Length: 347
Image (cartoon, rainbow, N blue to C red):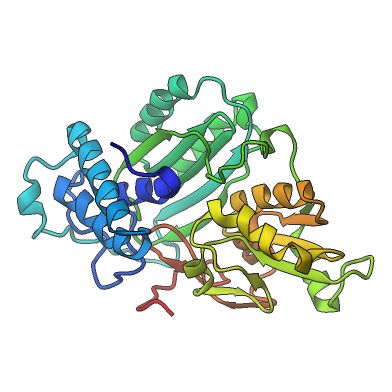
């Protein structure tokens, strides 16, 4: 019996070595073999710590843990054969000299029709491993979603080669830097959705929702109205704990625990949005794109923030923003200047 897949994306990232934001005192690079393999115990440990904060109930936590344990055992080629010893042998993190950190981090997604995801999976995995990259690539019939890190030339070369495929030519990666490799290994997964909403009528690959450029949004926020004089509502589509790290001033936060709760939240709060210009936002754009489409289907005048919060940081900076932006890797949170900021405790 497999666990509910509502947290599948974040579970995959836990398997890939992404640190658990709710336990900042445990080093992210714990447990890996020097070649980057994770121990079975390390994989289970990650999901246990993550699950304590995110699982709906005890049964869900047990199922989630069993799923990771089974998958880790099946994927033994990537595991440290001395896994028990590795629990007490954290890898030393390298330091760097100079003003530019050595590890390039890239996040990107694109809603585009993919008919051959199972065929594409081993091809992309081999390319990424050959390039020395680590992270996660999610493939689904609706598109691709990736979080990768590695040598700058190698990673940019990987993205350039990926974009030679006409389906991925519009891929627009967002770049940032870190002092160390934030991922433990390289995963390529095939999913039903690259970001689960559980609403099959929403098909972003057939057409995007209207997008608002970061500079345009800043102008609207400076004025307090959009260009047509309508009230602007900023709607946070992220999970509640992400909003605790930082958000736009005055943004609406429905405190959802997972994205599948978004349609229900819309039904509850729909009247609050009527007659207003709604701009949905999220970390990199993927959730707010689906959210905007759903809102428009419900008759709400909704737009997505183009590029998400990280795109806004890159073009505008900290204007109208308070705090940091949570990210799903070792950096944990980024400041508006896109520099990592380790948060010592959850706000």
